[in-house]
Amino acid sequence: MKKKSFLLFILVIALLLIYSPILILAVYSFTDATSIGFSGGFSLQNYVTLFTTPELSDMIWGTVALAFAVAVISTVLGTCGAIGAFYSKKRPQALIAVVNQIPVINADVVTGFSVCILLVAVFGMSKDTFFPLIAGQAALCAPFVYLSVLPKLSQMDPSIYEAALDLGASPAYALRKVVIPQIMPGIISGFAMAITLSLDDYFVATYTKPATFDTVSTYVVNATRGSQTSIKTALWALSTIIFLIVLLIALLGNVKKKEGRKAGAEQ
Amino acid sequence: MKYRFSRKHLAIPYALFLLVFVVLPLIVIVYYAFTGNDGKPTADNLLNFFGDPNTLGTLLYSFILALVTTCVCLLIAYPVAYALAFSGLKSKSVLVMLFIMPMWINFTLRLTALKEILTLIEGNLAFHPFLNSVVGMTYDFLPFMILPIYNQLDRLDKSLIEAATDLGADKVKCFTRITLPLSMPGVISGVAMVFLPAMTNYVVLDMLYNSTYIMGSLIGSYFSAYDWHGGSMISLILLALICIFTLLTRDNESSDVRGGSLI
Image 1 (tube, rainbow over the protein chains, first blue to last red):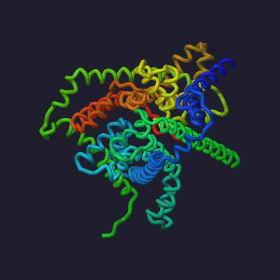
Image 2 (cartoon, each protein chain N blue to C red):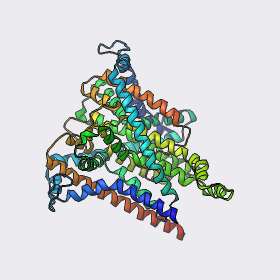
Image 3 (cartoon, one colour):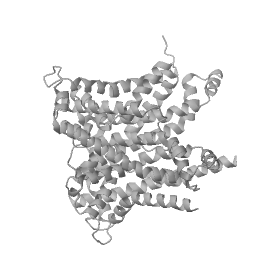
């Protein structure tokens, strides 16, 4: 028993260390203090600033829109790639697997820089078209979709697809009605992963984005290089909102998991 | 001739995509790294890097920073992963979720929070640039070290430990002879997930006002100066380091957790 409480103690300390900066910032986001440690009265000014300053709201919605666009493209490409590769011969399959691994282990700085140099310096493309940004982030995200779909394909019972063909389904129809539904969990977690990666990305974005466009990451990094206090504290509000959204998603996911387990137990 | 759909044709668009946006950029980098502004082949970029004490100093500084960060992460992550795996709590999945959640919050915002706290404690961030960078990177990368070690420890066959205890091994021996060796694959993938980003993620240093360069900052500065050739050489050197590192740490089912594994 003694050992158990010691292990719990470690976990509590670690969680405190991890969450205290975010939580302290969250508390201060509801005050008019301009720095942590200074006392201030209750105020929602930071939240008002966050949603009414065009610069800030443009940046937030731009980041969200970009993440969705990138995630959709990456999910389509990565899923098709995984299905195609899974049913290909050994050699092309191995080749795709190796190349797919490159963006996963490569440093994001190198990925961003190399996509930028190809599209901008070699092809002479303008960053204002958003093409380099979307292509660069897709190159970062699609391999993760591929990796999350592939295991679902190998877990699948291949005879169901064969049965569909024997019963007269065309390959395309069988793919849509048999294969896709079975690998859906992999596609969904790949999509979610692509969203997270795009939202978190600083390096690819900073090398490929149009000069006038900012994602949350690039904006925050620029804002720390000295800017108005009102912007700085408005970012505390943004951090708090994102924390609450993440917490909500985690809770929902946990409830769902429990329900799934219950349903499984009842069967 | 009518086109007949086959499942493997679906790989073609993705293969082309990888070719254009992953392979081709790397070829371009190699080409740029070994040419000068006049387009003629040259080894100047390579010599500039290895002949300049400043850039070599940067390489050394990134190496030390990454090494210290990895050790600190490991020292914190191992006990946490151990506690997660062996606490015997019913709500383990909730706890694991709590340790994954920070990965979903934008890292620049998390660093902003950390920066405010550090400023409060230290008064002025400029006094401890190296320490702050280590703290910042540890804060940023810790989940990537905890998860693979936890996955490995959780999978560990607990009856092995019981057997060892029954056969008279004490707790220390149990740990050093069974738990630790069996968790090594997790430790290795954790180290791989932390060491490389620690050499390149210069945003952590920028945000915590450490003006010393690491390898990533070099690419950033060449990029700002439109020096594609110098930047390509640094990218190539980083790629070489990543290759060596990957070859050293592979041979274990990598429990890849980047992007926040959504178990």
